[in-house]
Length: 241
Image 1 (cartoon, one colour):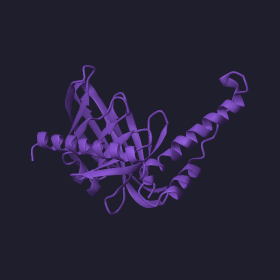
Image 2 (cartoon, rainbow, N blue to C red; image 1 turned 135 degrees about the vertical axis):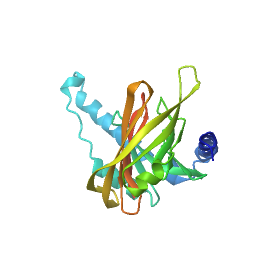
Image 3 (cartoon, one colour; image 1 turned 120 degrees about the vertical axis):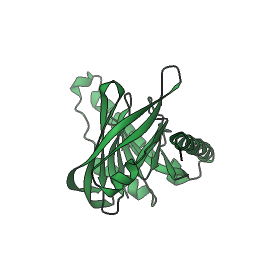
């Protein structure tokens, strides 16, 4: 299959997922989609109320920053649903709880209550929506098999974004994969010994970015820090089960 056909299939998967998401949002009957992601939003709202109460008319500098109880947030998310759920953290530190809403051609679309969407293929991000400077589509090339094998490798990846005129721009990144270290990942119901894989990528203009994948013995990515675009930066993805 050519790279163009792979990119087109990724776009098609996103289009099908978008239709499904609209249907789910309209009926509002699937609690795993409509209620679970609200946990993070409601937690953020409660933090905002706490800040407002502490201000009491004083300057923002006078109010101590509330401490985020990340474990409480995880426990609440797990209690709310028996199904798959993940936390996706943006570069700003904002956390979105996401649930799967659609699978198509090997691509799984996850969505938050705020309509943020991420499309994964075997734990690797191939598209986003709602993050601003989104990743429109991506061809992973040999990256999937190399990361799953947890060894050194060199390969290319293709990324597609939109420019300021709404036109699709495409670039090829040359990437080197290496083992960084071995470590345990314990988040939610996930408790695995993993190999931390570091992916260093370069593309035209001397620009570069790094990705990291925590991969268990079965080849599953149980945590990752993946680059989306210059504007959106990286997303930290943490499956909770």
